[in-house]
Length: 405
Image 1 (cartoon, helix red, strand yellow):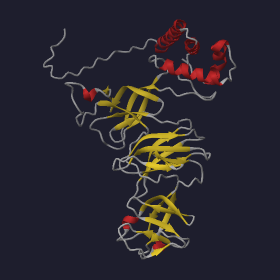
Image 2 (spheres, one colour):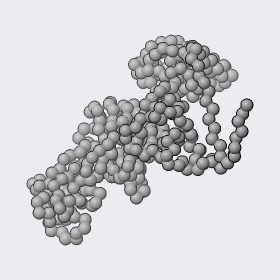
Image 3 (cartoon, one colour):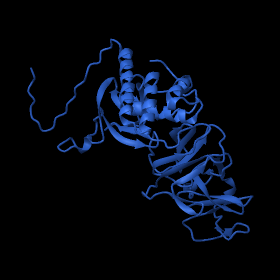
Image 4 (cartoon, helix red, strand yellow):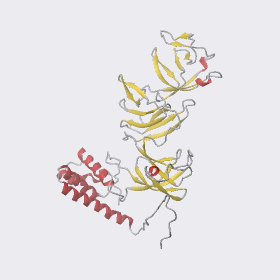
């Protein structure tokens, strides 16, 4: 097995694809990606799996986008068992996992971020590079009352809230401090609410709203019906009952949702120039923690999550896993291939062409040849290494099991 990039093999692949095509033809790139994806689903071959150290968050581990599934799991130096999503629903089985069953790893399906929200949070986004005006990111999920978060876009309601990733796009919020005893609960994160006299007004989760008329901050207390003042040229009522509104300090926070989320079930992102980092923001203190780091070509993030029953420590623990690699398309000549066996890629590319021309028998023959080449490579890579099969059994209500001679 050797390392190969798309640029190092495209000339050879071009010669056998559709009886020869230009190496720069976009169809060749698409054919190469399809061949890789189909070969990855054929089995475990050289370069298709690897060893990885993963952090534990809230009793769960989430695989990076490069990996599809966990094949083996090691906790604190001891090998442990990996179960699929059916384990807790087996008839006459163990039922829901008991606390302290840390030597189990249970599949929890797919999630859009590597870390879940621990409570109601605003979502903040940072970009590594200056993005175009067409670059956006959409968050879909629910609030703390399990209501779907909806926003108006182009005059119609959409599921979720979309942020523009370009500079100066107006997705800002502010961290307010300076409210003292009596109204101290008014401190915290305020999301953009509306525009009054061409100036932004902000609102927090408790219903407090603040705005600036150009010289002084005005605020509206949600618990009081008294309306003592209003901004110039505005019919919106503003109260200024606070003794010292000039003492308020507002720190602008970039690209933050106007809605707070309790859970996120999907993220849609356009292709970007650089990496995009997603943070959850405490609505009271403004403290933040990272929940996702998205690659430039990552548009529909989805990661495999596993639970460690009974292990809810938030940080400070790593586990070691043996994981199968996930198909990620190549886009440039410098992108690394996962399946690097050139012969197998050629045979699979021809098989796909035969299949598209409805020559299914010939397609199956070329596909079988591709798999055989991968199997040959695997034997050479493993060499004299000994792989010992592991037999694990859990029995329920079976009584004693006699020793086997």
